[in-house]
Image (tube, rainbow, N blue to C red; front, side):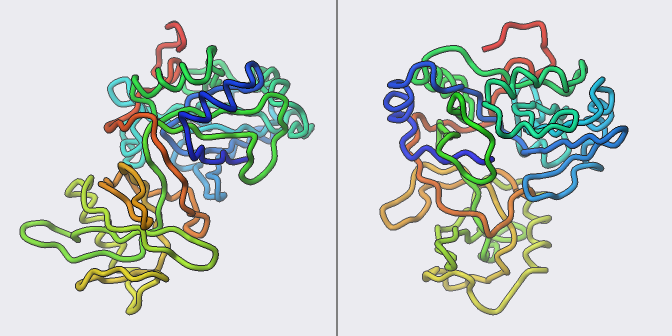
Length: 327
């Protein structure tokens, strides 16, 4: 199940959500990798949202899940990595920091499909499946009024919140029952090309990115900041392998020296806003996303509550401080 992007986060938090007190569960929007965990007897498997295996990537999480007293379940959650008390997606991608599995849903338990139960009932059963370990934690809903929670989340540097409709069942695909409330503009975009490096810069100059509109890849602009030297070199090698002679974009790029690639890589970026002609304003690269198929990338509307940069803090309980009071 996927959340629908809140086109007007502040308005949604202060409007429809606030107008329905008690009808929404509010959770932190985590800065990590979506992960489905499946246990059958002694076997534990971890999958990305497009069914890539995470088994070798997070062996410690598999061991901890195998220690649960319940030997048959399917969990949904997010793997995050903490660096200096904050969640850092780039660090997670690079294997740095300590990985923690924040579990927010239970889809299957002891041979029973739970997806038709209400979200409240699924969460009530969640603790029965989770082991009492250091790196597998339940993600608890936050207490408070949606607008105040969103304002606080943005002030504290979170990526945002996710609002989940009380009483809702678990359905595959995007749903109005789950809403993203973003603090800033941030989304995945498809890499369709690049510009050559200039001066002393290695690798490439900027990524040319876009999003799908039906069967057409719309050009969204170029991303030239946010890369480390190592990322420039690694990405340049990937781009070279995917080069093609023609543009994959349906709309003109306008870069004289542009070089094009097969639209297979997905980059997550932050940016200030969408311009009226559908381009990114002041974008910055975060990391490649290997857990989302490029063909699923579409434009997400964004009207940020507060534009913030930098790494996002981990919610309480994801920082290795189980005894501290939750937010």
